[in-house]
Length: 328
Image 1 (tube, rainbow, N blue to C red):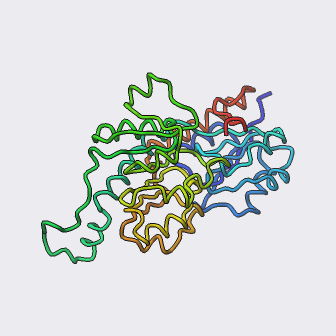
Image 2: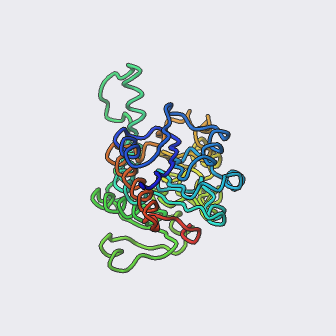
Image 3: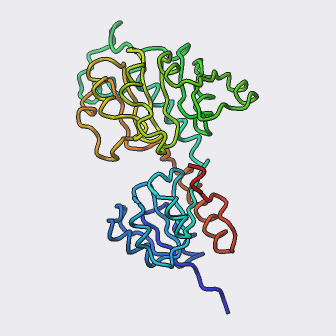
């Protein structure tokens, strides 16, 4: 007798190739509309599935996990970040959690550099001028930005993405500095020509650019709070392609409006799509709609990791990308 296929519920539209392969391997319920599930829909999905495939837009807290039926055994997250999932409660309930690490490193690092350049060279202001049809021609003092070569870049979080940003920044002639939970091995640090700062406060006060590349965890919430933001030089800029919750968005907005910071490039926001409206009004800010990982190649590779995690679990083994609370 053939083995019964796993029941899998996918909460958002995924690339066609990923959905097709999931359908070939499992008993899959796909999402027809590319909008987030309501809390009620998500709760119902967790009761009917062996495996749930959520994304960052699905808030899976302790209460929701507590209401899940006995059937759910794996939450195979489509994405690297799992701060939207209560991993500890899931573990207590015997539900495994997996993610898709590593595949978005290059894409996110590329976007970090794009934002860094956009802010320092005032690209969004130039684009706005062109789109309004208000450009009257070249002028020696028009839209003067700053040269990135020679500037000090402070990377907050030197994991895969932070190191990829460091390599790119070095190629642009920037001096790389970093703060991390643990110092890198000497050979990696030397290869990146990166200077380690044990004190985040001391690093922040000396940098021309700060790049946020650490995950959101309880210990990194508002790591860049009002006090720490005020340590930054008035001509410094901040770039965030990681998680919005790491930065106190209201404090950042106040400082940018007051001219206490030169600019910001943001791809993520503290309250998701509820972006501070005063932030959107500022000319010295480049805002993107969480595009850091938005490449077709990256999305397909994310899907491949989800497939491997589910298939490995179905075969009775530990998913290769299982997340446990001690990792967070």
